Image (cartoon, rainbow, N blue to C red):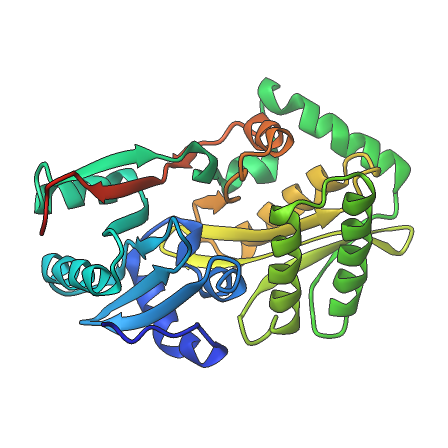
Length: 305
């Protein structure tokens, strides 16, 4: 069997370059996401023939579509053998449309594909979120106008080790509010764990972010990192829900920051909605320019590699 292990900070040195070179737009291909959610999804990693292989050990788990270079067909034979040795069905998780097409080309008719709409990533052009132009985004501009009226002294500053504690305090307030509202489900709880890990290792993970202030108090923050290629992953965004326009403002300001500091970036990947109706409505309201659909691939009954 393949010798998988839980990702640690030291693994960033060899995983990061392979992820960044892949050109994949999915949020799964940033090392901070991999490390932050590894415990929640029982994710382990291994380097196999030049590929970063991620194994998800949950009951419905399997293998991610591996980033790397080499003989992918031979890699898939190796993964299928590993699954057999573990007594598990061979399943490939989180495949994009392009990756399902590649798999079908390599093994015609062997796999059945299932789409998971709750896992699709919402991607927007940087210019759309930075400028909020046009009639369809008029409501977003109105939210920002209300925020500016209420907080004329607003400002944003970059997150640094010196102000990270303010992100921690805001996140704790947000967590308490969610719990009091009865919204503290599994996604929220595991998300809190992931956020705390990323805050604790902010510099080592090479994260970037902004804090939004009003009346000299932190009201919202966001943080993310480039996936590589033309896409940037917005990993976390938190705000006090009762402050009108705070989410819209931190969203816009971070897009503007990315446009200045990462001119190569075309898309901001704001990740999936986890099947939450409110989050889905919010993400759709920004009119995504690209949806990164995710699929499960399973060998059809009676098929083998």
